[in-house]
Amino acid sequence: VWCAAGAAVAAVAYVLMEMGVFMPLGARIRGLFLEAVKTGNPLVDSVAEHSPANEKAYELYLGKPRFLAAIGLLFCWHQRTPGKFLVFLYAVVAYHYSLKMSRLMIICGPIVSVLAGFPVGIVFDWCFEQLLGLISFRPVPAETAVEPPRRTGGMCSIWRTAWHFCGPALWPKEIDDVISAKATWGKRMWFIDRPLRAAVAWAVMVACWNNFLGDAKDFVKHCEEVAVHMSSPQLMFESTLRDGKKVIVDDYIRGYEWIKKNTPEDARVMAWWDYGYQITGVANRTSIADGNTWNHEHIATLGRILTGPEKRCHNAMRHLADYVLVWAGGHGDDMGKSPHLARIGNSVFPDHCGDEDPMCQKFSFYQDGSPTPMMARSFLYKAVNHNVKEGVSLSKKYWKEVHSTKHGLMKVFKVMNVSEESKRWVADPANRICDAPGSWYCLGQYPPPLQGMIATRRNFAQLEDFNRKGERVKSAYTRLIEDQRDAKNNGKNNGKRQAQIEDEL
Image (cartoon, rainbow, N blue to C red; front, side, top):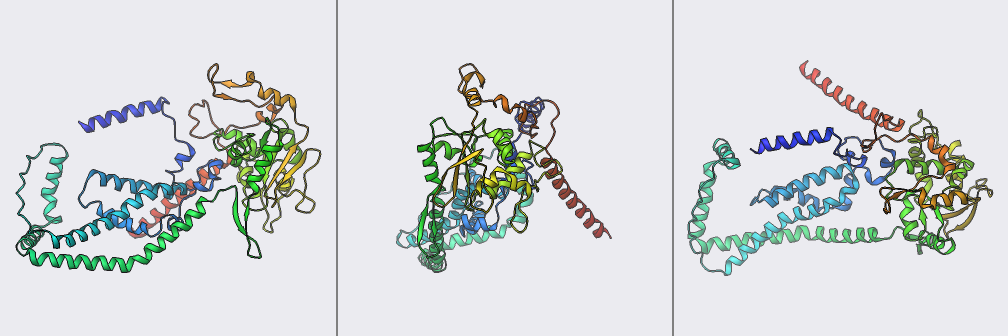
């Protein structure tokens, strides 16, 4: 019956999937099932947390309890319950997905704690039980439990049949005889059995205390150090000067506070999407994109503007923003991320780096640290190094530097000659596309002067675009990653075939 019901559900699910009812898996979800590290989406691939976890990460976040957790998996078969089977399944799923994406290491914490507690709890429960046995009364013979009638059919019948044939090999009758003889001796000679059990229990507890106390203290110390590190806010951090003096670097929070105090309330601030929430939450200003921007084409447009030539960048930016900020100073600044920005922009604007350069090698550094010509001409390179490197600065015709933080980690520029007409057009509710009249969910549109640039975009084809009809053209980056994945799989298959041939010979 269950098999027939499962087959029916699978058939219905297949029909609904073919009808397009189910939404295909997104790039982030697909990455959990792919052997390759890259997903084919340059935006997803640019996020460090999407890389697979390694042994160093397991050591840092899970420590030595992960070894106790491995032993705890064996204890899942001790006094088996449905709850322990759930623990086993949880452990398998958590370990698998943490190998695919390092940010999913967080789901390993609870299960490692549970599994590590199994051997510790079970062993110490047994030890305390033996010690308490010294002060308890003489054991009273237990009444023989009446075995309930056996259920027929279902898994119980299958289990009994399998155990009938395989049980004698896995659990010989001699083991039951030894257990029975031990129990009988313990009841008759309880005044000897109890002290012996207590002595063994005490020896086990002393051995554990002597051997694992140091490890436990080290783990507690490690947890405190990691907790302090992870609790530090991203907008400020502690740094040590050359003379050994420690200072708090708060450039980022002070930069956002300056924007809040010194810019109009309706000011629009352009920056890479990483800082969108901070612009909105701390500076209380409108950001062009943030971590909740699902529109790949919009983020690619932002990447293309920021990594484009200075004049070309200004021609687009003046219709979208009043200010633009960059992270500088080398502490995780925008130059380190800039190749990703160019690559993401090229996935939608094939004329940015070109289909012949899907990795955007044109926008990168040479081995000596100098920028390529495309990078040297870009707005982002000039903004980050504005008046820092000799001969590198933004044109005063297009931008005006209005603020630079104490340590130079954030720079804010005012966009010159902002198009007030485009600003009014974007703010007009009549130019927003809402899912229903009066709805709060409305999509904005680009102002008319940018329609020429938007027309050159090539929509990024990905599996999650389930409602897009017609033929979809994949970006050069996606095709490159898929070709690399196919080549890797073919290489593995060829290697297996070669091994088979050698074995046959």
